[in-house]
Amino acid sequence: MPETADVIVMGGGLAGCECAWQLAERGLRVELHEQKPQQRTAAQTSDSLAELVCSNSLRSDNPLNTIGLLHEDLRLAGSLILRLADAHRVPAGDALAVDRDHFSQAVESAIRQHDHITVISGEVTQLPLERGLPIVIATGPLTSDALAAQLVALTGQERLAFFDAIAPIVADDSIDHDQVFAASRWGKGETDDYLNCPMDKPQYLAFVDALLTAEYLPLQDFEKGVQYFQGCQPVEVIAASGPKSLRFGPMKPTGLDDPKTGRWAYAIVQLRAENRHKTAWNLVGFQTKMRQADQRRVLGMIPGLANAEFLRFGSVHRNTFLDSPRLLDEAMRLRSCPQVRFAGQMTGVEGYVESTASGLWVGLRLAVELAGRDLPLPPETTALGALLHHVIDDSVPEFQPSNVHWGMMPPLDIIDGAKKRNKGERKAAHLERARAARDAWLAAWFPPRSA
Ligand SMILES: Cc1cc2nc3c(=O)[nH]c(=O)nc-3n(C[C@H](O)[C@H](O)[C@H](O)COP(=O)(O)OP(=O)(O)OC[C@H]3O[C@@H](n4cnc5c(N)ncnc54)[C@H](O)[C@@H]3O)c2cc1C
Image 1 (cartoon, rainbow, N blue to C red):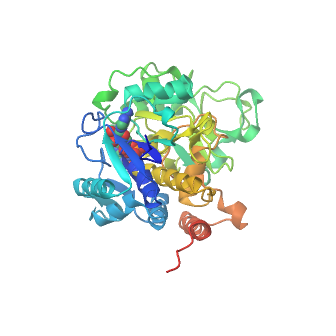
Image 2: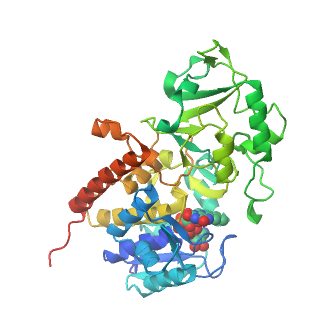
């Protein structure tokens, strides 16, 4: 029987629809599998493709924020999702918020009316590897159990997570470096891999008290009854198990000589470099469901972090995602089985727009590849490139999903040779550099067609 498809895409969410669209627009025949309407995830309430399961906002549309810059990248690269989000925009200040029903219906119509896309309803439980076609898996944070079991078999148990445990990340230049010291525990490894924020006993007790009285986001119904792995427990769960628990857990001071006192502090918060440029630092072990305003207030009590700029807030949710840096190449292909590639939240990007961006990249890259050409990742200095490089950056030992943020980009100093003075100037310089790199990349790889 002749094949009626060139590519199989699984999951009709934001990433799957964007990916299918990019492929179809380049003349490839796509089979798009979506489990709705027969089956929904615990977060879904509609039968449409591209459902926004929670907020109706695609966040800031201001390019001085990295997410706004990512919107711009997606628009210029021809994203279906961004075009239809713009078309169904509702007033929301500088945020890109949409009428969720009209938006999803518009995506659904565009996909169903495309000559090259066939939507097939029903849960995929087996990967059709025997068909020999490229398969893109974009089944999202709540991938169905049967498919997840197949993926475990393909990737290995320890490389597919079902919960994230996201610790906050702060910008290096917002840390008061006079209050922290660089040292690795017991002097192992590179000295400046960690920054240490020392606390005395009254500071520690006040901090634990603030943690215990902060406000937390409620668990979703489908998250209740979860047993956290020991190393992934939210910091508030550890704090609630006893006043000294943090001091014997993530805030353990042993083996860390404070150069100011020559002794170990009463407790320590460790910050681990989040990227090789050391422009961003991860609060080790501080995964939390604390509300963001309280994260600013409570974590601001940590010495050195009073004025911290949070590039990413901590969170803990049900989330199916891969250890992408260890599994995927830059085309988001599974190295051990290149017929299969992943897109969307499963690759460890976080959020509607980032998932769309991932779907766009995988679609573009696969289409170009099937035409026998090459397409390099967008430069790391662009929002799209920074996000994609982050997903496959194996210099980060414990991979966790992330929204896009400035800390994913190389520091300006190295590129520009000049230190930018304040946050506003730095953002403007990042934006200028990112736009120039993006425009050059698009011009080189997607030159405008002559009339
Ligand atoms: C409860 C919850 C709230 C969230 N709130 C927000 C928010 O407010 N803002 C934000 O930016 N992000 C939010 N997210 C994250 C957001 O859902 C994702 O970033 C985004 O939707 C991911 O896009 P995706 O295409 O990768 O996956 P999805 O949008 O989830 O799409 C995956 C699709 O695959 C289908 N599918 C799953 N398994 C199978 C199978 N076996 N066979 C066939 N089809 C299958 C699903 O039905 C779904 O339609 C939230 C996530 C959850 C779980």
